[in-house]
Length: 342
Image 1 (spheres, rainbow, N blue to C red):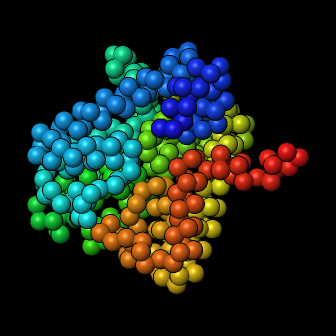
Image 2: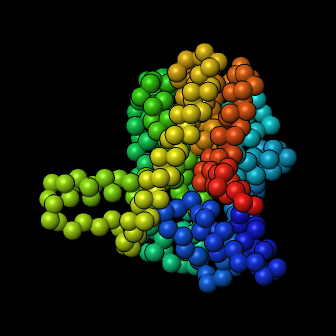
Image 3: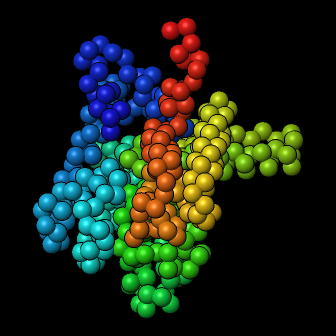
């Protein structure tokens, strides 16, 4: 949000924002919706505001008090997950409210360029997005698997779907809202949610995590390497949305994922000094770098991180900032070489 605002305002002062946008772009490839980056930023802000207003109106119509609706609209739009209720969205016990928020969490986790294509009636181009299909497939598969896995606990198929879809949307969008304590779910369902924390939303969305586009390119790169290893003479290229992904881009994605995992493990090591279980230490670090919110066991969806030491809390705070700013800008800022001879 801050980056988009900067790229919208800075051109007024004759400051070129192209390289700023490319450096901060969460996807493997940077592209603009219109020729001017400042105009692209304004379009994205308009889409963001329109969605937020529509969400606010729908929540009010569903029976949520206007102040709560305003707060949860902003929290959903930014995939922040902040609620003025201790029980989060469960406090309203409303199927309509849960489904409205779940749908908008998904919408805000989708690349905003797709929304722009839909608004300009370029439907074929929008729905042919490889990342959108990948993201939609993950949401659908995860929802179906969790629905089936928790069906015995929930009693009815509707309740199973209700809880499964909401929490899949909440975790993959890295929002972090909750309507039930999913720590009582089978471990299979919990594992799916942990994997969704890694994946996160789409590039160009308000979500955190590694991002679907990076995961998709990684999987296609692995497929290419397996094919090349089996057939050394074959020429295999990696494509995304019909465009060839350059080796330099693939390298940058691999470096990002490597740095992401290194920071995650380092943060988990520091948090483990509090001597809680592996699940608490690892999930605390993972939920921080992916900007999700809930973790496992003592830091689950209906609990908080107050049990952790000041050192662990400071580590998580720094990790959240690193994850929110897509890792490399912070690493570059902390690099000694940047400040040498200045």
